[in-house]
Length: 525
Image (cartoon, rainbow, N blue to C red; front, side, top):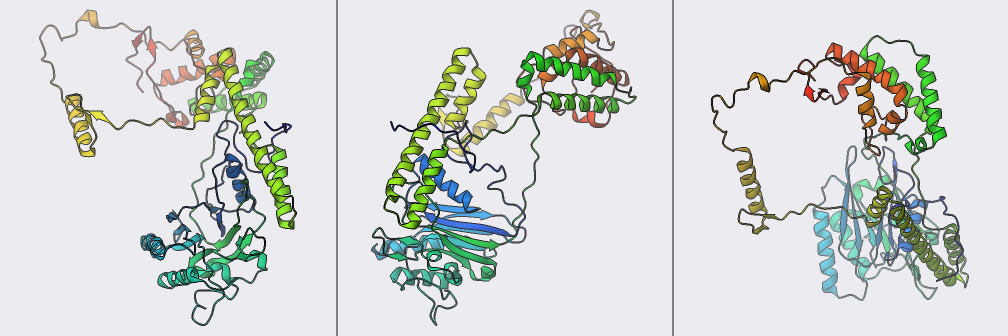
């Protein structure tokens, strides 16, 4: 094990939650959600490999740093893949590709372009089509025959694979966006050979010709780091497009009270004192709606001021030392320093050590939770660490106990099951046995629930449960039971006497109230 000093996690970049796999996430909760804005950034990058967690984390960090909304990280996968984004007026289809190298057989290249053509043919004609990836070919600058497909700022001389790219463009009315913008040479070159001399432009972002005016910029960025041990000979290529995607419906997250602080005696005492003082200064309300609104407002405000709300904790498993080494490796690569590969190796080793420390801490927390009997926390750690969702088995048995695998046979078996379950015969009515007698009738009380009954119900509430429509957890009711029981008794008494609910209380689920284990015949829900 490397002798690295453990540093405090940094939150200067997107990081992973402490209870998930050590793969980097974006801190912003809206990341990956398209909003109604004009400019979006599409990127492609041949990163060589994403096998290690360090490569994944540092690559996503580069994506976050260069503000890429849609990114394709290709290794060596020749099958094209497509995603479709919903827009306000027109949708956007993005296809990611990895073309065959120049020395590959022509038959294999033909197969690749036939598969890519099939994917393009399956894209709606009205979509904004973007095709990005490593094409392994040089298109060069535009000439008299290709000026409608290429720009005047290509790099290198055209090769056989470049001819294939141009033919594919002409058949599908596409344009290579990399060659349309006059930029410095380091923003045009996308691939650097290991000899340190050879450099070419072989990664392209193609766009359908009718949408070329939406392409505002397309350039290569040498500063992006992948985090691999040996790095990547390709650089990040990012295009800036102007469009209007359909906005997501904003769903506000309900704030949760930090009820764990109520376990402290001083905090619980202060909560009860503040709640009592708030109730003493209240004016009596007349309607049921006003009584509930005042009660909910007071309880929520006092609890928020006393215990506050829980915060979404984001802990990065990569230490600040690893981030610093990554920055040093990037600067060394850009400056051509001889210690570039040494810094890259140290970055990878440091990231591996951080990952080991992360899982060691998770295992320690699990052991501690099991030793003290905190099975709730133990279950949360196990669930978040595995990241596997329980799936329902689709295999069922027929009436003879044999397994059914075919879809039509399973549907027929379900039809048979529910037909037998729901269409049973009604038992015959026997005079004198099915007729209720006076002894079978219950003499139940329909009086208003007492104060003691309200306290008993509050005391039986279960902890660690999600709150209802009011947003007030059960722990708050149980902590302030002496102050809340009279108020709730007043509210329930008003509802009981009026035999109906009004206003906001209609959102609540009302159940029959049992009196001495009997159901009141006068109160209806």
